[in-house]
Image (cartoon, rainbow, N blue to C red):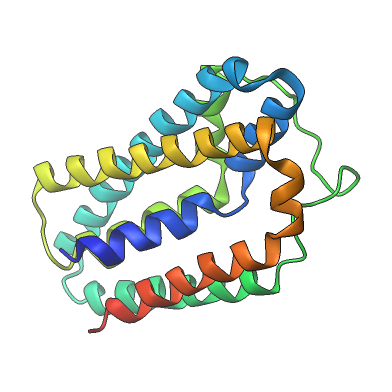
Length: 196
């Protein structure tokens, strides 16, 4: 299993703006970092659960449809390149008027349940598993380990955004284009490494 490309993909996909990170940033800005810890832990637990489910569903697909391996690799690569393009072209975080109204409950439960309706995480989990895990190992222990790893990356990501929300929001706004470019380049590297 290509660990560094998987980790690069996980970092790039997890640390870029999305529902988890924007809610963590906004909540910490409003209520402080300490009050966001339960939400961040819920995000990590939900990510772990979604990735583990993606592993099990991919395993079933691999066993039922042996020729699906190439198609899943191609789809995963295409998604990573599309995501890199969207990140580079991003105009930044949505303004308050652009955001979908969400009940702002920053609890462990809210963080966990958000993962089951978070399209970014769902695509991220399917892409990570089908591209970086399934072609190399069908071990349930390996799948559990990857789920823990990606849950830990989610914890670090949402926790960082919450901390940034409390401390560094003005700096991130000024350097957003550079940050997005670095994240996009990590995604392009991850996509290329799948085929090397």
